[in-house]
Amino acid sequence: MDLGLTGKVAVVTGGSEGIGKAAALSMAREGTRVAIVARTKEKLDATAAEIRASGGDVIAVPCDVMDEAQVNAAIVQVIARWGGVDILVNNAGTSAARKFEDVSDDVWETDLGIKGMRAVRPSGATYSRPPFCAWRWGARLRSPSAAPLGWTALPSPPRPSLI
Image (cartoon, rainbow, N blue to C red):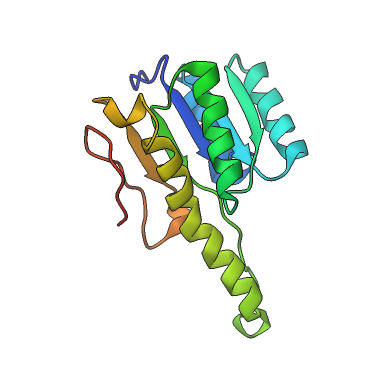
């Protein structure tokens, strides 16, 4: 199926495993150049190798979305390589998957902080840079793991928004 993504550039946070990895692989199969962004270099490298083996054009960028400088550097790296960003998939996150009573406040704060900032920092770093801020085509997606926010896409032209 042709989704019209050939030649587009996507940044996928949390792109080394799970939903992010699946999104990156799917977009690469559609001809999208994909930058996968996550904290663990080894997982990034393994996913990048898998995407390359399937014929995809990919870069793996180690980055913690909680660190604004790292996010800015990651987006600058993608723009330097491919000239811009067309698609931003905000998927980075953690999971406090255990019994409610076993989750400390620190774990909740980290979990919720990452899920909130995964949308704010990459979006701000992307939208504030030409050519993305002036383009007439663009999309930002938040993964279902961000429930109850769900998947969202920006209108054209893309601009920052929080839902």
